[in-house]
Structures are given as structure tokens and as C-alpha cells.
Image 1 (tube, helix red, strand yellow):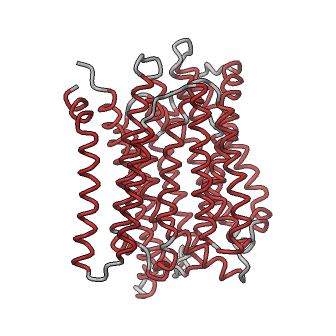
Image 2: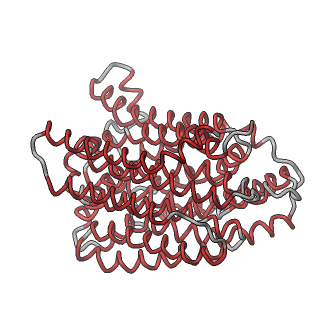
Amino acid sequence: MTANPLKQLAGQTAIYGVSTVLGRFLNYLLVPIHTYVFLRAQYGVVTELYAYIAFLMIILTYGMETAYFRYAEKPEKNKDSVYSTVMFSILSTTAGFLLLVFLFGGDLATLVEHGNHSEYIIYIALIVGFDAISAIPLARLRAENKPKRFAIVKLTNIGVNIGLNLLLLLAFPWIIKQDIPLVADFLRLLHSGEPQVGYILLANVFASATQVIMLSPEFKKIKRNISMVLWREMIVYALPLLIFGLAGIMNETLDRILLKYMLPLPHDEAMAQLGIYGACYKISILMTIFIQAYRYAAEPFFFSKASNKDAKEMYAMMMNYFVIAGAVIFLGTMLYLDIIINFINEKYWVGRDVIPILLMANLFLGIFYNLSIWYKLTNKTRFGAYLSIGGALITIALNIYWIPKIGYMGSALATLTCYFAMMVASYFIGRRFYPVAYNIPKILGYISLSVVLFLISDKLNLQMPALKWTVHSFMFLAFLGFVFLMERKQLTKIANS
């Protein structure tokens, strides 16, 4: 019997979740270390630099990951030729990028006001370069339904990163301070003796390099059947996705870049505010972790099931359960925030009011990703670019307006407004080109109920811990019970199929 496709998607999401959710959670365990070890202004630098990394990754992959999924699934295309052509393209552009950075790294460091640390730019270039050339081999593993190998590669990457962070930020400084004969003298040749922002980047460089090494069998599958005709066809498909990606990453990261320049504060104080915002953003990333794990499984799933006669019904059901999961994450995080927030140092808690805003913003972004099937399946990827450009304009305008007035709270509200607008616009435009009968009343109901329960808990402001956790747990279980009652028939049908 053929497995229910939703069961298949859920199973693959769970496996990808091992590498993504568990992996991100393990990385998340570095946040307490970073927020305890570094001053708020130093953590602001970390936040800023990783915003640049996210932005550059979009440029160096320029939509070719999605193009690979699209063309590898076309029966008239040779899968090996598609893979080889994409890899040749990515390897060529990455080599050019690294050459430019090595030549002009000092100038770039000065441009972004890190002239005293030009090594940051080199580290960033190496991280992005290694990750860019890993992107398509990882996509191939997803397309070939090899989530276990994917998980092993990603978890190894994360393990190396965490291990080196612990060594460079905690172990080596401790050994040097103990002045252990010979050992401490040797480590002083490699380490300053104090935690440095650059060490976080250096750990990431080695982790990304390890990932490339583990994917070496996939690089050996690159053949000589590279097709320039196919490349031009794929570039036409991918370039709107590049614009979409650039606009999208602006929506995700521009606030962490603009805060440094637009806050009417001295430089160190502005970086401290950025550090607070970046640390609190890490709490909201619980939603992002789920969305990323889901996307890893869902994107190839969307394309592989597109020809099924019940595809639209399946997509509507996927949206419904995605929203349920997102609402559960939002409510669970907010009801138990007093526990979860201990993952960051207390000096960052002053920014906790942005967390519900960012959680809900990321839920809207996840819904937008689900809706994006209409322009990807109809080859109207330019609309994805239009929507993201519109969102980017909202992001830029609202950040410029709000940051000088209300600081990082303005950035959070701008993110929420942007993703809400993109979600609504995509839904209504998509109804014209690829209508899917999403259950809007249910979707709105689940989201609204989670928000209302959070607002009630916040308004109650219970001070007695025992009473507080009892009431909050009752609210959470009540929400789960309501969802189960609403979905009982469909869940039973899926379980028995």
C-alpha cells in the first residue's frame, strides 16, 4: 500500500527536523554562552555579522536551489545534466566572489565600520563560500529522499561548530588563565586568552569546511554533460527567485543592519541595543526552526505531487496543519516564556516585548512560504519577486520611520507588518492563477485563539509561580484539546490511510 503523502511529508519533516530543529537547538545552546561571555555591544557585532552572512548566501546561491528542484523533476530533463550544470554555475560564481573578497577585504571591512578587524570579512567570505557550494549537494539529498544522510551531514556541521565555540570561548581562555606549563604557552600562540567575536566566525569556517568534505561524494557526481542551453533556461527561472530572495532576506535581516546606523545613540550604545534585539530574536527563532524543517521537506514535496489530481486538496490540508503547529509554538513559547528566556543572559531581558511580535511575524512568513506554491508551480516566479520587493519597501520605510522613534520595537513591528502584507497579497493574487481552497475560517480561528489566550495570560500577570504555571498549562492544554476536537475526523482518516 502506498503511504499517505501527508504521512510521508510528516515523516520527512521529522527527520529533517532532527538536523534542523535539534541542530538549531544545539546551536541555540550557544546563545547563553555568547550572551554571558560578551558584552551587549559585542553581541551586537555578532548579530550584525550574521545578518551579512544571511544576505550573502542569497546572492551566492541566486535561486538555483529551487531551480534545481524544478528542473530535476521534469521528465524530459536529464537529472545528472541538471545537477552538473547547476554545480558548475555555483562553483564558478563562488570562486569569483572569494577572489574579490581576498583582494578587497580591507576596504570592505572599513566600509562596514570594522576596519580594525578585516579578518571578519575573510571569515564571512569563507563561511558563505563553503555553504554556497554545499547548498546544491544538500538539495540533491533532499530531492532523492535521503533525509538521514542529510541529517548526518548537518548535525556533524553543527557539532563541529559547537565544539569549537566551547574550546575557543571557554576552554582555551580557562587553560591560559590557569597558566598550565607548556600547554598554556602553546595555546597563547593560537589564542588571545580572552573570548573574541572573531572566534565565533572562525569556528563556523571550520564547521562549514567539514560539511564540504562530508559532501565530497556528491561533488564526484558532477559530470561533463554541462548544458549552456539548460543553464540559460534555469537562470531565467532562477533570477526572479534571486530578487525574491534578496528582498526576502532584506525583510529578515535589514533591521539588524539599520539599527546600528539609525539609532540616535553613540556607537557603543547603539550596538548594545542591537545586541538586545539580536538576543531576543533568538527566542523567536523557535518558530523559524520549525518553518525551516518544514520547508526542507515541503519544497521538493510540492513539486513531486504537483501532477496529482488531489494536489490542491493536499496543499490546503498542509496549510491547515502548518498553521496549527505554528499556533502551538507561538502559544507554548509565550505561556512558558519566563522559563525559555533563561537561555539568554538577564541583561538582555529588557527586550522581551519584541518576542511575541517576532513569533507571529515568523508565523505569517511561514504561511507565505506555503502560499508560494502558486507562483512556483505555474512558473510565475516573477510574482514572488514582486511580493518580496513590496515587502522590502515596507521594511525599509517602516524601519527608517520607527527606529529613531521607538528603537528595536519599531524593527519588530516593521517585520510583522511586512510579513502580514506579503501573506495577504500572495493569497489574493494566488487565487487568480492557482486557486487552492484553504480553510480560511479555521486558519484565522487557530491563530486568533492562540493570540487571545496569550493576551489573557499577559493581562492576568500572575505572580505566584504555582498558580501561574497551573493556569498557563490549563490554557495550553485547552488549546490542544480544541484543536483535537476540530481535527479529529481528519486525523483519524489520515491515521487509517
